[in-house]
Amino acid sequence: MARHIYACPLRWSDMDAFGHVNNVVFLRYLEEARIDLTFTNAGEAGEKAFSEGSVVARHEIDYLRPLVYRPTPVTIETWLTRLGHASFTVAYEIKDEETVYVRASTVVVPYDIAEGRPRRLTTSERAFLADYVEKATVAA
Image (cartoon, rainbow, N blue to C red; front, side):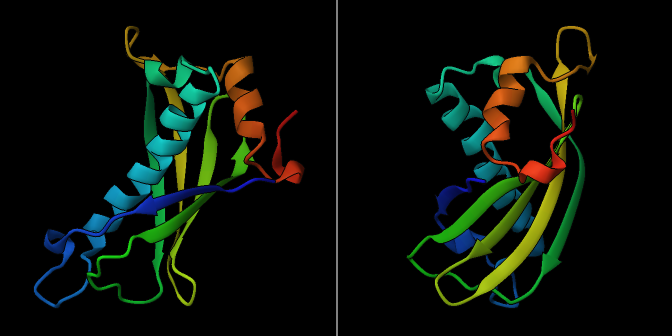
């Protein structure tokens, strides 16, 4: 299993009145890492289908430690815990060398924008994603 690594910069405006990164901002961080995996990395690998659309069906986030602004980016490790035929589940850890701040997961559904409905993953999308999934959870 491979993990996708994304260096996420923090912005001063990400902090709330309590002086730590606001809980809603973490959703943006997760999105940045997920888009880097499914668009940037997939595009570099020659996979263009993800650019046709996908939607988030579910988020689950465990906030473990407060994160405050600093100039050094946090690391977001991303991998898949489930790869189905019409959805996949992305897992994340937002961390640095010493601390895990957030553990999260997102269920993503491929979406046909022109038709306005969910679609199945293509064979090439599944092949690309399979490198990031725990082998025991790949649907046949």
